[in-house]
Length: 279
Image (cartoon, one colour):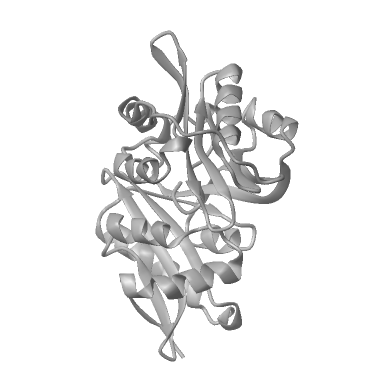
């Protein structure tokens, strides 16, 4: 039997939530809406006997870089080629749009498939999780200068993803943090309230003091018992700072790309990514 692949619609969000819950992931219905708003023609579901059995999402940034995320398959239907079929559909769609570089963050289970489809390793990530007593959190203040953050992020990420970051900042303005050295930004961070915990990212810093200040501010404003960070493994400061705060290892991820990586951004400044689903 071959799965039926079709475009995802808002009516499929509950099915997507069911699949991500089965996988133990942290996304919300609002995150699914972000995928559909960013790429209404580039998100797909696989139907198996009339039931949504899998998903994949894409987001295109400036027609120079695209992201693939949310590759999910119903656990009861794995091994039937559904994930591969969805991934090939996403790649074909992005190729039809002539996007020169496609990226994703791979789990160890998914990495062999991505390698067979032409993806190469860029660098390693680790998911770190903090479990703590839930707190009241600090009283929210004014949202920091989001325009300055977006300007710096375009250089750091390698493409303009301002629409996505604005959505995240507007949903959780208390998590927007910046560090300054004089009049210049030395770092910034955003955060999301996930279904299972608060997620810090992107977390960007030029110096160790900036990285520390941003992390401490995030932990001050977060109220949740669980805090999640997808840290760049070889960042000079972030892993040690997380260890100091009691974070522990959860799983490995691998940043991969397909095509010409002509817009790699500033990996040296990235303490933690926005998330595997977004980049």
